[in-house]
Image (cartoon, rainbow, N blue to C red; front, top):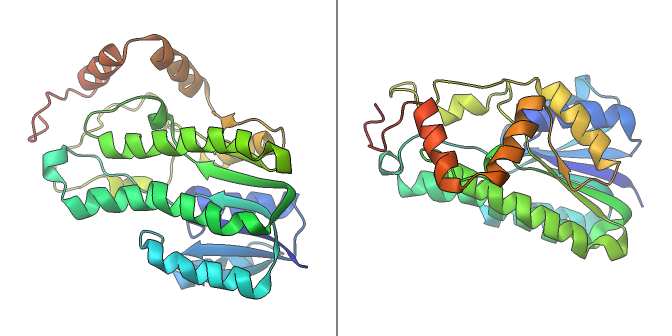
Length: 263
């Protein structure tokens, strides 16, 4: 039975960084990489020694994930690690976003991760591991980023609860909660034709460092990985302060007044 690692969102950002780092740490027969761009997935082979198996899927279309399920049923691999790194956010007032964008965000950030885990579990053996990229946004409600933050809150709590449920099989689940991180995430999150929602970033972290800590935490059996001093301080503060105060501080720091016009 061949041993594999499965990574979604592997064509760029945190997903690609996970592939690069985990390939140097864990020995498996294949790394199955999932994203929409076959070209970018195939390009990974030049950067890692482990055999790369591209699987081209649009994870926002949950029905398409059946292709992954069918491949599992056919090959019956031993999944050592499943990393759900696919996701996206959109910064804007709710009234400026259409229903397709909002529901697509939930489907990719939440439903796809749940489906990937459900399909994968029969093939994850003892001491297998699951990593889900959540966000520090999951610790608090965030106006103008409300749907994204709520989807990450779901993924954070789902991961932590799942970790407890799967202990009897010695399967460990980790939720990674990055702060602002230098990735292509912002290319989709920000509409250049509109005024910016986020005008003040308390910190901007290197994805390689975020992922290095995440992988270390994955093998240290932690249930949450939170990289960076600013990230950890904010995590503590939003736990202590009333959420109404947290939202007012956010709005004030970004000069947002609650209207669709933003400013």
